[in-house]
Image (cartoon, rainbow, N blue to C red; front, side, top):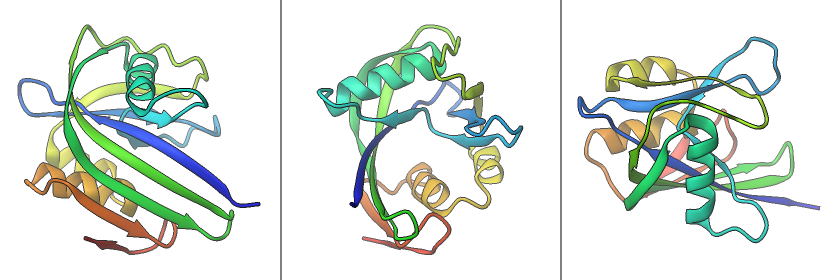
Length: 155
């Protein structure tokens, strides 16, 4: 049976224009992967409720307002027989960084310059390309990928 996954992510910028990324060690093997704060929408939860919950869990910050939809990503992972649809929103926040991830995967949450973001996301097409495009002024784009390591199509 095919698995359908709905994911939300927040683009949070500080006053210097730096982007908040979280370091995830999902396998607890010391292999940290950086992403925007966010995660899977749980059953019975709206997209915006999930966004607020994930940001709070992964960063300790509270989403103050969602400004706009930044981009959408679709990844068809045929190896795992799953489709992931990810919605990234530009949001404002309040509070202090203090991650309290109940799953224990988040090992770091901090702000990075756009250049540092490009370096941290060097090999991650679906995570890198849409965010870097957004930071350079592209908004409202749709990205489709045939897999997590595959080239994508931007619409």
